[in-house]
Image (tube, rainbow, N blue to C red; front, side, top):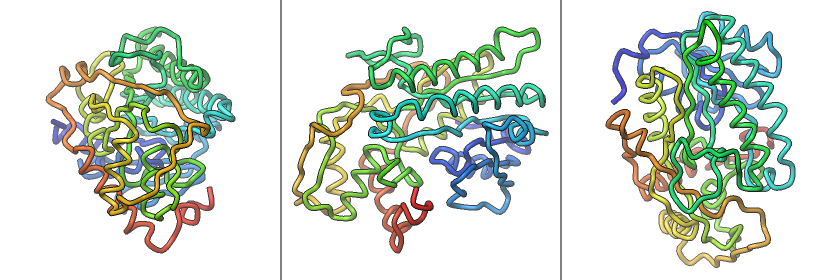
Amino acid sequence: MISSNYFKDKNILVAGASGFVGTHLVKRLSDLGANVRGSYLNRRPSEYLVNVSYIKSDFTNYDDCVEATKGIDYVFMAAANTSGAAVMEKTPLAHLTPNVVMNSQILAACYENGVSKFCFISSNTVYPVTDFAVKEDDVNYEFFHKYFVVGWMKLFSEKMTEMYANHIKEPMSTLVVRPGNLYGPHDKFTWKESKVIAALIRKAIERHDPFPVWGDGEDLKDFLYIDDFVSGLLIAFETIKDFQSVNIASSAPVTIKDVLSKILKASNYENAQIEFDASMPTMLPKRLINNDKMRSLSNWSPKVSLDEGLQKTIDWYKEYYRNITPEDAHGNQ
């Protein structure tokens, strides 16, 4: 359970406040009584909260990093250059330079400004290909071949985060969280950026006929609803005192075919003519994630089932995009 006072009146920077995780994190921290500063770059926040201070920051510019972290107690690094399977397949280097620059400079600025605690939101791409549920210490510097660039970028950023906690004379408290595959309201739904659940939901609501699905539908994933992730993130941030990395996932693997079936049912499109296309870009065919460490830290466990989470996301999408497309809503990105 999140302490009612741990975040209250703290000055907290959410870097990437207009992104998927950042949008939900800003709201939750604000509800907990924190003084929240939310940074964004090109995409403006989809919801402006009156008690949140929003700033436009380019974290590839060190001066912006310093300005954003002035007077801040805690930092959550949720800003990142992200994309779906097509971009990771065709132009993986798009993830490399900007993210390494941003992550290194925000860490340096946090240290310069005396930030008390820093959290880097990483990825499960740092793990090797396995048939078992990966634990935090299963990192062995081998990656799924399509994750080689993004995996190394995330892992190097994790190592930089650890350096500030464990390898300097006057350390800064840091931690790393590795999420499962997140989904929910405010996810990226543009065709260019959307990942699998967001893309399938949009196709179902728009009644695509035929209904194309990338891959054969047998990929096995760990999906976690965004509210459950934010709860786990804040518990981990409060609970972990020394540098650690921790998985925050559902530990309930499901195939894309099963997810698709649930989406079609929730959107009343069960007669869709599905066409699986194995020639289209897909990612790791199996990712199982062990949650034991997170459970041992606290009494946290996911509260939202996949069926409930998908229904919540579909209902939100229908309302939020009822008169506009995701591309138009976000500047045709």
